[in-house]
Image (cartoon, rainbow, N blue to C red; front, side):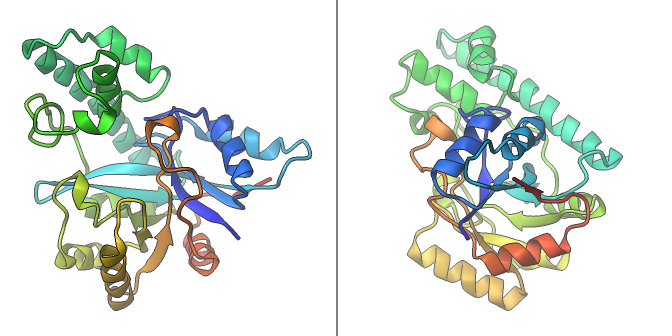
Length: 286
């Protein structure tokens, strides 16, 4: 089985529609794909329809999830939640807060960029985001469109909208323990996304991962494009020591990033164990 448990559609900051993402997962000969947009489940319904409408195409299964924005000791991190009940009132309320604050933050970044002399406007960022939840990547893409920076990664620096950048603005984020509790209360399972991706900014130490494990974290995303060989070996040791499952994922964003869907995958045994622990939602099988 080929299993990719971390992808993004244009419901957040990817460039594929959910249906296109499912089609690309089929082309990549994936057996399972998880849709994990940032702080939203808006793309789930379209992805479910695409999986069920196989029309003689390759059968594929969909894991419905989301990537939650978290903050721990001033460090931004992400938590992947899978197979939770998206109608759970407490979880849905927090996700709404996360989404609406992403918009406030993006507006504030645009205002700061204007003050810095950048000819950007909110309408441009909204156009780039389309129907998706507006986020920092959309502001970055606007900077590329304007020719201010050469590519999206160049926008995520101290010069522009990187952490502590001149136009950076903090956003509402959940404490990891709280996010784990919310997802678990809604019947889901949780995996710490790209925990050693130091190229994105500061990362937490082993003690923090232990604290998350003690709070009920199910796994760590080890095989990720932003993790080198040394980081992967370290994370495997941590996972073994703390009794966490190991996953692998592409963190696919469509044209927004160069990593193709299915570039990193999860071992079937780890996947089956995650699914067995979840009670909030079922895997959608095509």
